[in-house]
Amino acid sequence: MGSDTAEKKHQLQQYRDDTGHFSLVRNFRLADLITIMNGVCGTLSVLSSVRFALLSSNLPAPPPGSVRVLYLAHLLPILGFGFDALDGKVARWMGGGSMLGQEMDSLADLVSFGVAPATLAFVLGLRTPLDALALVLFVSAGLARLARFNATVALIPADASGKSKYFEGLPIPSSLALTATMAFWVSKGWHAAGAHGDVPLGVVTLFGHKGGWGDVHVAAGIFTAWAAMMVSKTLRVPKL
Image 1 (cartoon, rainbow, N blue to C red):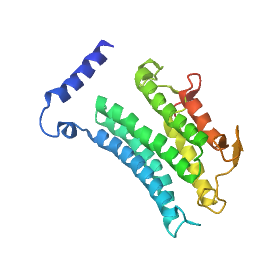
Image 2 (image 1 turned 45 degrees about the vertical axis):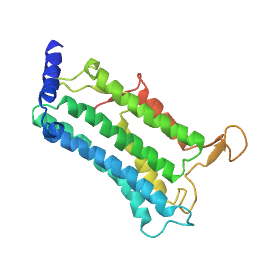
Image 3 (image 1 turned 30 degrees about the vertical axis):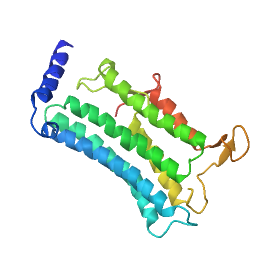
Image 4 (image 1 turned 180 degrees about the vertical axis):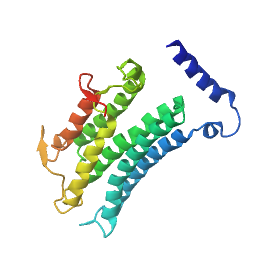
């Protein structure tokens, strides 16, 4: 434990002692740049979702070509996962990652696998107040899950190579399953701008009148359940 603390202090001192211009960028390692590409993919996914919403707003049907923008919004988090998997391999290949890289990895994951799918779900039709609450819970749970991982990863039993044997709670990249599901909805026209005009399973009214604050899409429950599984301490997912 003492050697780990000394190494962390040494790495922090490297950033502190470098006071030149663009010192942060100059201290990036190759793995850090790959991690940033994960965040870039997530950000472009969010922007693509917003672009589709703007293109299809107040129109009876999306204009030609706009659905390609929506599919791109689904594809980008998958590309981000590729960078997410690659940065760790590159870091180990080059003798270990940096403290900066570990923090950036979590932030990039939050964008690509938390904010991006939540934005997609909102654009596709999960727009009632309770839907929005479910999406906020989903992103917040992902944030908490990543913070817990960074704080407790050293306490989880590891194998001979030093890698943790399991995840506590569902890892946030698992949200790619939700992204793939939403891509399937788009292919079938199950979204607000599609042929069916809404996402599958419809809307239920939990309180008040129909069309009011108590409306929620059943599909929003999937995001709420995913949030619960991410922050669960008893759910242990074996590492492949």
